[in-house]
Length: 506
Image (cartoon, rainbow, N blue to C red):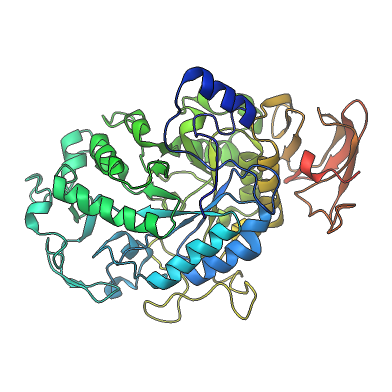
């Protein structure tokens, strides 16, 4: 079920009413958009997505109904849904999902029918589904049989593509990319031996758009375009122009690096872009810097415009040291990771994505399995018992992270004010009159009287717990804000505190 929403240019930067006024005064908005609308179970705009990495469709459907919808998540990013290579010799790694064999919706995550059911059920509770689409390439150059039983051989994909549908760049002896300072190589040679589609060809564009339109027909609301940097932006624009729903949300994986010719800004014409610098800087600050540096975080740090940025503390690539990975904070960093997510979800920059991982001991390791290519369920006998210390991490279910989604939703359109820091590792700030957050990275507790712009009342600290079922009290800590917008509280070492208008109980 598609949801109404404001145009992405204005999402989270201004209120809905202001956005409508600006649209009327400035002319027609861009056709694609981010989610930003009140839904049945959640009265605030929805403004946060989650990546359920490698989850089965049946599990995603249940998670939407039991957790994501009630907690106010806007959308879920899912694994590439198309038929993919089955790489038994490498232990069925996660990256086999990023090697398409055909565009049948039959994958390690489930069948076409299960996929359609998932999209419908997520939509029914106000959660959009964003499909990760791999349209730059097909499999590694070799032979095999895909997850739906389709045979393939080098540059031959069972009637879908033949050799002439691919780039053959003639570089480096094997057609692989070797020089990232050479635009031609990056966009016309093969990324680690993956058969590179000629996305400039009409036939290829039609096939790719046909695949995406099939997903749209099943109810998909958005697309993450994998490896967008390896395609000319105008090729993506041509494919996008063929989509049956021009309002579908699009965000593109573009990793901009110094001294390379391909820039994130080239891709703004197609939609939003992943801001990998955000993740890198969050890691640098939280692991080895000072939180006090974050007072002007975002565009003043050289990042792209907030309304075009899709941001994250970590993602499935860089938590493994790939895809622009560096010193990033991950679930393996314990409470530090929670603090970084509290900050991301408290701050107005970008469209934040919460990561939901599985435990791994090496970077290639596939998801928890029952042996072979069969993914183990998260939901078992009506409970998410797969969320444990050995299988699925489920960071998005941690109390503080999950409840900070409501904070982000409640503070849409509000800027940062009342900034405070101790000059080192403890910070606090308001989000206008709608929220207030404290993040304490210090090794000691911080006690003081905090100045907010919140109306007087009793609020639940959402990092510590939920509001009770009657909305008359808190299951965790409660805080009383006086008529001057002040409250006195102690925030423990390596901890946080967050109040917002939707968590006021008296």
